[in-house]
Amino acid sequence: MDRPLLRSLRDPFQERQLRRALEEQANDPSDPLARDMARDVLAGNITLYEAASSSVYGEVFAQRAESLAAWWHRLSDDERERLSAEGREAIAHARREEGL
Image 1 (cartoon, rainbow, N blue to C red):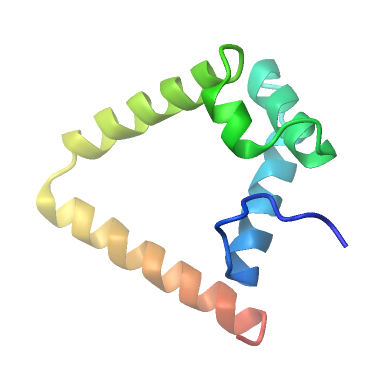
Image 2 (spheres, rainbow, N blue to C red):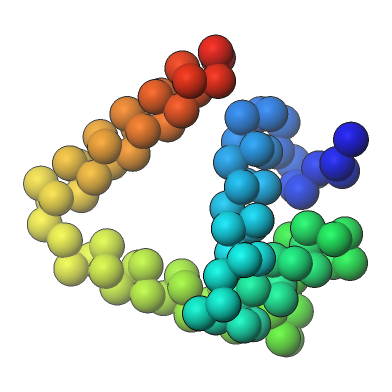
């Protein structure tokens, strides 16, 4: 059994989604630093918390967070609500597919 990616994450569905996202990132050659970070986390060489606070990998999180925040703030309230609803439905659909 794989060790938990986040000790605080108690939902097995969310754990699987996080693992899938890291596996996807680990196979994405477009950002070598993010790829290496995902590989290190999946291999157990570093925890996700350690990666986020490290001087090497922390920049990956910071850049992505800044980019996402800027994009989100450019959206109208209606666009934000529509995307939030789509996200909730996508999660519900994925849970149904897993029989949850």
